[in-house]
Amino acid sequence: MSVQATETPEHDMHWEYAVPITTIHLLSCLAILPWCFSWYGVVAAALGTIVFGTFGINLGYHRLLSHRSLSVPPWFERILATLAVCSLEDTPSRWVANHRLHHCHSDDDTDPHSPRDGVAWSHMGWLFRRVPHRKSLAFLDRYARDVLVDPYYRALEQHPTAALWIYIAHAIGFGIFGLLLGRWISGDWAAGTQLAASLIVWGVFVRTVLVWHITWSVNSLTHLFGYRTYSTGEDSRNNWVVALLAMGEGWHNNHHHDPASASTQHKWWEFDITYYAILLLKSLGIASDVIQPRHMRQKR
Ligand SMILES: [Zn+2]
Ligand SMILES: [Zn+2]
Image 1 (cartoon, protein in one colour):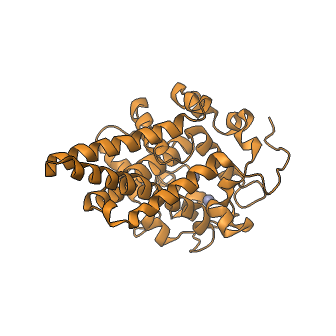
Image 2 (cartoon, rainbow, N blue to C red):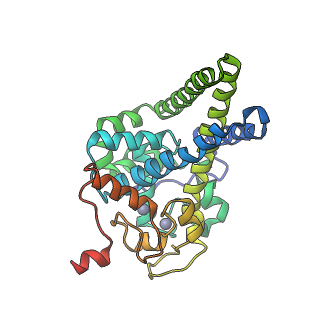
Image 3 (tube, rainbow, N blue to C red):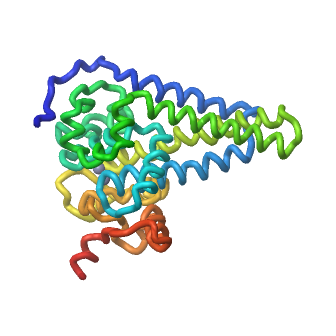
């Protein structure tokens, strides 16, 4: 089945993505209001970046669903995927399909987000342009058939607004938790309302924007800046700043060299926090079949 399709005009805006991305960025600006500030909110943003970004996106969408670098029980896989959905980074099958397309056609004409088409394009511009064939069933069937086999992921695909409603529901959950916590700590509902607002603004909106730009930096910066250990036939690079922010995803040249590996750490100092989380899950008996880097596989 071909994924080639008629090119769409430059101005064909992908409103389903453009509106939420713009809205969440604007709502995150509420963080400058002193009334919305609390250290609880800041901690929620920092911890949330790890929980929803590292576990949801890096571990769930990327290393588990896209590359099958490890196995986890279905219930745990769905928890990870739901954390990723709460990062508002597309449905599981569409994220996986676009990422596999990137690996198959890195930095050529078919790459959805190559910096060769512009830095801003690779960072977030590509999300604003409607590309009908990448929304088609044929595209998903070709690049993410194994994901769509799962009824939960298929349902998310069949109901286009479901992911957005899950995101809204989890934001409401943050608000209710903040309301009750503030009421419990201070004894009045006004303090509860303020803490609810703080947790929603910092713990949801600011955190979502942080996770977005960290993920997007892997698409843009690690194909532009950094060193290359391997000659991989595209522009991928190892970038320590992105690796630090993205918990190991910035060792992107290592990843392109060996995408099947659960680890991007090829030198002792190329710390891969996401892989350490995978090892923790393995020690707890949750993760299995963890694929080692190629040089270690070959040694064995
Ligand atoms: Zn890449
Ligand atoms: Zn990958």
